[in-house]
Image 1 (cartoon, rainbow, N blue to C red):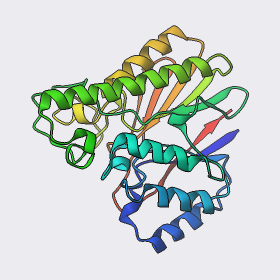
Image 2 (tube, rainbow, N blue to C red):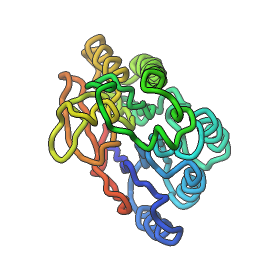
Image 3 (tube, rainbow, N blue to C red):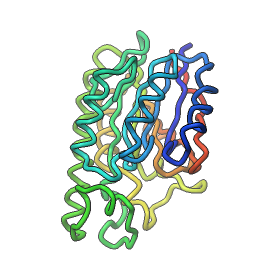
Length: 266
């Protein structure tokens, strides 16, 4: 049985360097096949320094995706290009959005993309919620709600198209998929304090484009299984979407990064 350590929404920029080093040291002794990080690793400025420390100090492979906070203070294109270039020189760290899929075993493959809260569920135009994303990510600042909605929808669609390519490729050789994303892809997986219901926050905390893609592929490949791991809401829960499609949402607390229960695979 294989094991992955799983970390979501650690927001490492809220720790000082010494705190981060001590925490990583405790994780370095774990006996796992790798570490999966499902986004919100740090803010834009601190992302690469944090990833560099993890890459240097942890003795096992690291697979990660980016969350919305990882773009704060920069642009989506610039940050993605910086991460892509950084990964070319790492020990054993992979940005899953820049890969096809990772074969963990004969049966199981790992793949992922951060996704994006695309406003597809709930009432985006009626919601009065204003995320820091819309002030701190240059692509999303200074737009009226119509233009912002268009940009968010484009980001969600781009994520769904990438995941569809990854999944259809992985299905050719693997029967079970571990899929990492940051934003919950279904209302049922958008947990907050034990509930997963439509509310004013839903458009900003879920990605309908990815959800639609996953549901369609799960129905098209009933002999395969997909287990999605995500975060973003900082509240945990599990949702069975289809007989072969399950979503586990990880919890988190600002300033207290903690590993989730290990992901087991055959």
